[in-house]
Length: 113
Length: 330
Image: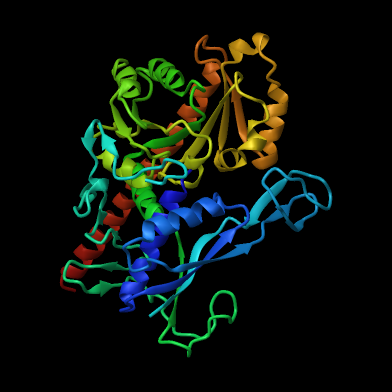
């Protein structure tokens, strides 16, 4: 499980932005997570709570916005939804799919005080 | 340490010396033009990240987005006004720090014509044997250096050094993957020959290393026939991230139920167009195909470096001509 590293990366992004803003406290973190990203959400929440302890983001709420997986289907010649890697195109059944969305792991914004 | 999964940080060691990465301060990356500040931020000029200087001033390289708005990422639920709360827009990847180190490593590889590969697999797929046989086969043809990643011991680096190739061992402690900063630090103590091949053997783990770019040209995933042929579907992230699949230990196929065609089909479901090579590192079966793949990559990387150097020389020559013209009175 690599969620601890991801949580540390998140804290760094959040703490940098909060300090730059002159904030004293981070109340909420909005995280955009793609459905196809390399993250187990429960583990990430656990690790986020652990790494933020004693930091400017201690006790911050973690709000996760899940973006759907999306792939370009070569036979169909258009974008189709993709629930999981390895799934077939829901339209034509092909696996000739190029992932074009749903791999994001991005801090969108934070609420600070 | 994460008590859920046992991942730990702050225990990384490179050739049994504590890695600078674990220090709360320090500038461990001068060699690569990057370093870490006391607050942990990466200072890497030329990228878009902001960073804090020692005097506490904040420094951005771009127009860093900062805005105070009433609606958050979810649209509206946390409107300002009830408290002094305000919204700061960030829009930054949580892997941005790793990616900055990876970009720096990638540039260092390009500058020196080094073809770098990140070898990933489950424990026991035969990565180290594959490396040893590769180094022996390429001796006198292409110089090879190795970075070994394991939680503990230097057994693998010792095996590599016994072949005569330079090797550095990274011990991740409780960590489950290599990251770009560890590799950057290992590079400073590794004599990689210019125009050579760098083989980075990641921690044996088919999950965690998938998300971490080390600056390599390609991830190479190794699957041995003593494992399940359905692994590409069970652990799709790693196969999706790879550019080459090596099916190893094919000398054991008569004794196992592994279906090679099925494994390849599954792998190409998660990574269409994935290159595949079936080899046995032990018997050498089909090994020339793997060596040829490596040598083609090394040659491409070398050619790119030469081209870059030639382009720079042409630019210098053109500038010198221009300077001579301008400094001669008309």
